[in-house]
Amino acid sequence: MKIILSAKKDEFWSEIVNELTNNKIDIAYWIGEIADNKPPPKNCFYHEVVDSYELNNLLDVAPMMFNIERLTLEEYYSYLKILDRADDLGGFSFNMRDRLLKDQLNYWYSVISAIEPTAIVFSNIPHLLSDYPLYLVAKSLGIETMIFNVTPFSGWHYLTNSILPKDGNSNLIKISDDISSIKAEFITQSVIPYENKNYSSPDYMKKQFAFDKRSKPLLTLKRIVKFGMIKSGLFKKRFTLREDWRYNFSKFVGQSGLTAQTRHAMIKHKFHKELKVAYLKTVSSPDTIIKAEKYIYVPLHYQPEATTAPCGGFYADQIYMIEQLRLRLPDDITIIVKEHYSQFTNTLYGFRGRELSYWSKLSQIKNLYLAPMNYDQKELILNSLCVATVTGTAGWEAIQYGKYSIVFGNAWYSTHPNAIQFENLTTVILNKILAREEPLDTTDQFLDTFCKSLIKSDLHNYSNGKVERSTTQVFNAITSYLNIKRVENANQ
Image 1: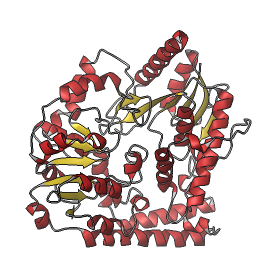
Image 2: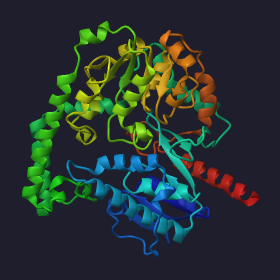
Image 3: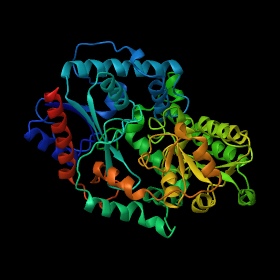
C-alpha cells in the first residue's frame, strides 16, 4: 500500500512515517515544510513545500495534461482566493493565477498517475499553493483522501474524507465507537467554558495582543537588520526563507535586489496604514451599536486563511456572503459586522485579504453597521437574533448561548442541528430566529457523532506543549482508515 503524505517534516511526523513503513504502508511521496535533517524513508520522494509552490526539484515522471474542465467553478474560484496568501501586494495578474493552477494540476496529475497511491493523507485542510491542487486531482480521480482538520481548541482534530461534504452527506471519518472518555474531555474544552458565559479569547489571539503591544519601531529595525544579514550571508537561516517565494509588484515588473525589496517593504507598510484609516472611516460609534434592537451578528474572518478558502467556497468573498444574507432578511433587521482583530495584527499578513474599498462597500449594504473591533463580542452575540458566519467559532459560541447559527461554509460544527446551512435556511427557521425562539439543546447528540471522528494530539504544536503530541493517536487513525478502505476495496 502506497500513500502520499502532506505534512511538516519534523521529528513528530518522521516517527509516524517510520511506524507506517514498518507496517508495510509505504510513503511514496512526502510534501511539507522541512524542520529536521533526517533522511526520508527509502523510495520516498521528499518535496520541500516552497519548492512545491514554485514547481522546483520535481519528481521525474512522464508529463501529463489535466483537463481543467474536471473542476467545478467553486473549486477553481477557491484556488484563485487561496493565492491571496502568496500575493505580497501587487504580484499577481489573473493570467498568472490561472496558469499557476494549471501547472500545479498538470504536475500532480502526472505524479498520481505514476505513483498510483491508495490514499493521500493531509495533516491539515489542503489550502496552500500546492496541496490544494493535489487534493483536487485526487478527488477527480477517485483517490481516497484523509484530512486532519483543526478545531479552535488547541490539540484537538477531527477527520474527514473531503474538504466539503457532498450531496448533503457527512464527510466525517469514524475512527472509534468508544467515545466516553474523549467526549467528556472535549466537553471541558468546548462546552463548559460557555456555561457561565465567561469564555475568553483563544490563545492565538492573546499572543497577538501581547505581540502588538511591543515596540513597532524596534520590531521593524530587527526585521531590516535580519533581512540585510541574510542577504549578505552573515546570517543563515536553518531552513528556507519562506518570504522569498511570495509574489510582489517588484517581481511582477522584473525588479530585484535590496533597493527593490526595501521600496516594496515601505509601500507595503504604507498600504497597511492606509487600510486601517479606510477601516476607521466606516466604523459606527458604540452608541449606534447599542441602539440596534433586532440584528444578526456577522463577525468577519481573518483572511487569507483556510477557514474561508477553501472551506467557504464562493462565500470566501464575505461581502458576497453578507449581500446574500441581506436578500433573505426583512429590511428592518439590522446586520452588525465586526472586523477580525487579526486582520491588522503585526504578526500576520491581513493586508493580503482586504482592499482599501472593502469596508466602504460593506457599509453600502442596507441597514448594516460596522462595530468597533474592541466592542465586546460576547455582548454582540448575546443580544443578537443569531450569528451568521462562514465557519467561525462565534457560530459555535452562539449555539452554546442558546441561539441558532447561520453557517455559509463547512465549519467543524456544521452537523450540529442548530447550525443552519444558509442553503437550508427555510422560512420556518428564519421566522423562529426573528422571533428569538430558543432551539432545543442538541449539543450532546451532536457530540455523540462528532467525537467518533475526533482525536487529541497536537499535530502542529499549536498548544506549545500543553497538549501531548501523540504519534500513536495519529498512527492508529491512519492505519484504521486505510484498513477499512482495504477491506471495502477487496469486497468490491
